Every structure is written in C-alpha cells, then in structure tokens.
Image (cartoon, rainbow over all chains, first blue to last red; front, top):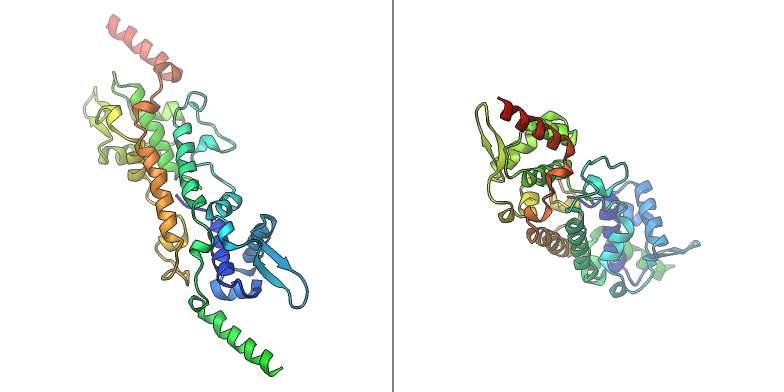
Length: 153
Length: 153
C-alpha cells in the first residue's frame, strides 16, 4: 500500500515551505534540495497552488510561500487533494470487472478504513511536520551568502 | 492509494471460501468464478494456506476450505499477511534517498494513519463479508449438477 509519488513529493514540498515561512522559495531550490526532476516539481507546485496550499508571488523577486499559516493546513487535506486514486481494490476503480461487486460486503469496511487513515492525517497540521532551516544545509548556506551579498549591495 | 492486486485477489478468495463452508472448493472453481489467471490464483492460495487462513485437503476428493471458522479470521489479518509493502512513502521503503529522513516528522503520523486503517479491518471478520452461494451462480449450477450425478451414481 503506497501513496502515489506525486503526493509523497507534495508533502515534502509542504515541509520545506513550512520551514521557510520568513522567506519566499523557488522551484530551483526544491529541485536542489530534494533532487526531484524539475518537470515533476512544477507539476506538484501547480497542484499545491490550485489547492490553495501554496501561493505564488510573480516578478523578479517573486517566489512561493505557504498560502495559509502552516497550522491551518492539514496533512490530510494535502493528501486528499493530491492523491487522485483512492481505489484500494478493483471494484473502487473504473473498468471494474469483479463479478461480485453488486453484492460485495467488503467495500464498506474498506471505505471506513480509508476514512480512518485520512482522519489521522486530518489531525496533523503542516506546522506539526515543519523542520528547521538547519535541516536543509544546502539552502541555508545559500541564504547566508545571499544575505551577505544584500548587506554588501 | 491501492492495495496490491494479490491482496485484492486474496480477499475475494476468502469471500468465496466463507460462502462455501459446507463444501471443499478447488483452484479451478476460483479461476472460473473470478476469471483470474490460474498461476496467480495458485500463488494467492499458497500464501493463504501458509498464513493459516485456508487449509488444503489432498487426494482425489481433496480441495480447499477455511482453516478456521470465518468469524475467527479478520480481514485485517489477511491484509497484513498479504500486503508485502506498507511503505506509504519513499522513506518507509528500502533504497530510500530522501535527504530529510533522519529529521522527518511525517513518518510517525503516516504510521499512525496506517495502523488506524488496519485496525478498522481487524474489526471486520471474513464472516462479515461472506456472501451466499446464489451470489456465485456459475458454481451453484455446477454444484446442483454434481449432487444430481452423485444421487444417480
């Protein structure tokens, strides 16, 4: 049982966003930090922006930030938004050919189990899973350089 | 988010087994009922037998049956036994390369969510999801023919 790779990546983007509440961040930084393909990062960031989890500020000094305070965004909401497929078994998906679907008594408990899974994540906010800038040393070093350059500029 | 196909198939085999508590059943019947590939059915039946969910009776009049009463086998136990991969995200799997794994605060809530999912299924028995022979018309008709033949034999 797995979350899809896009959801996995989106959660890591949100962890990064929650760790950098004081500064905008860029897609380049996400690519550098997590070593994800740029095209996939762009797809994930678009989905998070559409879902009102991230906000994009355009322009030369633009970048990305959390759309709302981290304690007002639940992990469950991100997973529900990103995970396109909650079809745990064939009969929950399109193209189902199982011959007992109409009578099946397994679908309801599986749906209850899925809800229980999501409810735990609904109770966990992005603030709860935020890290510190020191957990992203690559970016922290770049920030220090930028601040020094701004001071000298 | 999906269960793997083997788990899906195993649950359907258990539904069939619980529906036929009065008679042994065969791999041929499972292939006929569900239209699964024979090799996959054999793999699933082997896993269920190893897990003490099904018992095999050898010999000419042999076949398969539930290893224990249906109300003493939980859906959760079958899922835990069959689902080889509970690695919801990369860091829960082998070959993980995520750079924030050591500090990550998302793993614990994901594990709690997974447990909540399985606990719901632990509370549901195979008896709870059993159907009636009439839900498997193909096999019911064959049974009637066999009983008539036995009566005439």
